Every structure is written in C-alpha cells, then in structure tokens.
Image 1 (cartoon, one colour):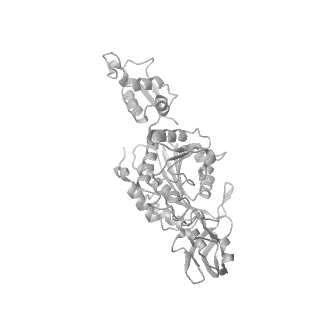
Image 2: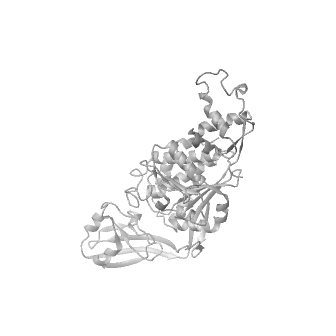
Image 3: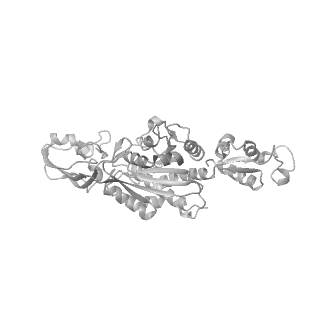
Length: 437
C-alpha cells in the first residue's frame, strides 16, 4: 500500500524541480553535474554520490578530464554580444577549450554552429573527446554577421578531476533488482535532458513509500554513455546476476507521442512488461527497433553484458523538431501532463512486476467451485460467462505460465486477473510461486 497519495498529482512537483535544475550548466563532468545530483539528494537523502577519477579505464572508455566553464562570450566588430554563457548555456560548445582572441569573420566561421533548417534555434553541440572550441548561434544571427574583427572569449579549464554519478538503492525482500537509469549531463534542455531525472526521482519517492517490496530497486543518475560505461565497470557482475528488468528513462516529458525501444534481444521480461503496458494503457505508440537506439541502452544491452533494459518514451530522441536545440523547453515541449502520464505508466509497469507470479493449482482436476460460492449454482445459458476469467486462470495455472502470460493469452487485464488470483488463493484453490528465486 502506498503512503504517498500525492503521487497522483506529481506533475507539478516535477515541473518545479525541472525549473530549479534548468539554469545549471551540466556536462559529462563538472560542477553543473554535481550540483544537479546534490539537488536530487536534498529531495531523496539516501542518494549516494560517487566520484570516479580522471583517467580511470571503464570498459573500452576512459574517464576524461573534468571541464569547468567559467565565462564565455562572442562579440561582433561593434562590441555587440552575439553569444554568451550568461544568456544561454547552449551558446558554448560543450567541453570547449579556452580561447581569448580577436579574429576575422572568415577565421571565426569554422567555430560557429547553427541549423539552416531551423534558422531561429540555437543548436546543442559538444566536443567531449577532441579538443576544440566554438559557439552556437541561430542561423538568422549567423547570416547577419558582418565582416570585421570578432572577440571570442572562453574562460574554461580542463584538469584531472572526476566524473560524478548518483546511485540510490531501495531494498526489497529479494536480491533480484529492477534497474532504472537516467542521465543528467546536458545543459538547459527539457525533454531530452531533465524529463528523465525528474520522473526517475518521482518514481524513487513513490517506490520508497511502498510497503513489502518484492524486489530491490536500483536507480542511477549518470552522464550519458561514459556514465553507463563507468557504472558497468564497477557493477557489471552484480547487475548481470540480479537485474530482472531495466528501464532507461529519457525523453519522457512531452505529451505528443509514445515510443518504445526494445532491448537488443527483444525477448526479455522488461520487453514483455513494457509492451503489455503500452498495448493496454496507451492509445497508440511508435515501436522502434534495436537499430534505432541512441542512448545508454547501447551500453547496457551490448553483447557480453545483455542487461534486460528497455526504453518507454514519449517522443523519442531525434524524432521531434526541438531535439538538441534551444527550443526544447518547459512548456513548448515538456508539459505537466506529459510528465504525469510517463510517471503513471512507469508506476503501472512496476506494479505489474511487483505482482506478477506463477499461479499453481492445488487441486487435482478442475475444482468444484459451486460449494465455495465461486460458481453460479443455477445453470442456464450464459450463466457461466461471469466466471469465465476465473475458470481460464485455473486452467492455465500449471506453475509454468506467469500471471502476465495468462493475462496476455486470455486478453484479460492484469488487474482483473490479479483480483481473481487473490480470491482463488484465499480459497486454497491456487497458490503462487515467485518468478525469480
């Protein structure tokens, strides 16, 4: 039973948290990422923040130098500011090296990034693993630049530091785990960046309010890709042994579409639960293939790791026009309703996982339900229709089919079948055994 009725109206809280996190200049390392994690920790104090040193070998990757951006601006020949960190943290190419020079427009242009097909938007551009510098401006501004000397100033440092990530473990009765991963390494973008962390944190609050959890829940808040490689480097053996279902939370904040990206095998328990929930509770959704991946699932489901991780998204990354631009904002893309619906659907999937089991008959042959008050005593045409679900559940309860499997087979909602199961267990007709020992 939940102790947290406020979870039914979590959208406002998630928007408020998103607005608080919005100004921070996040990247794959640095204080923006740390400050983000510290704010999350203020809400959920059991969040553990871990630091991994620069140069650490993590799978096939190496933790890069830490980046600190102090100030940055670009001024035109008349002294007008074209781009600045103060105005928008998307104006500076992520991980830019320091620069302090005057240069002609022709020299500057290779360091300017814009989107000709979205002339009013500022693009999001990074250069994590190759030293470079640059500014991002709208195509309209770029086309209006005049010849002359421009002042490019970026006060930035690269140094041996560390990569930060957050980890939260909510223990249950079983060591088997549900794994929920999200990233918090992008600057001010709403759906692509902040929707995942705020929905994940709300789920963590809700799960913490539940009593008698069957499974342990592991949440990680990481920088994308390098963070998942880092986390796997130190936790891979434990995860591959214990994780029964995983969800990569990204792009869960808009209210335009639903999207599903399966695991690499497409046959895990997480795939089954996600597709059932989408089929049952969502009017329509776009189903993608593994080749359409583009986030941390690439690391989690890679050959040799093969964690059962899927992504249930709203508009998938790369498919909506505001993606990786200054237009990916609260209100324009992310809405309170969109966040709430994502939260509700993930809650529904977790509820299914917590309740699923193998029903097993305790009666030899078909049981006589009438004397138990579970079957109509007056037999006439159509009189047994009201107990058909009950009879089907008994018939399939061989201990080899899960309740979710039977639900899908009989095309009966999981909730309805769960109610029947509780009645039949109470009358000692069925018993249950756990999906995982």
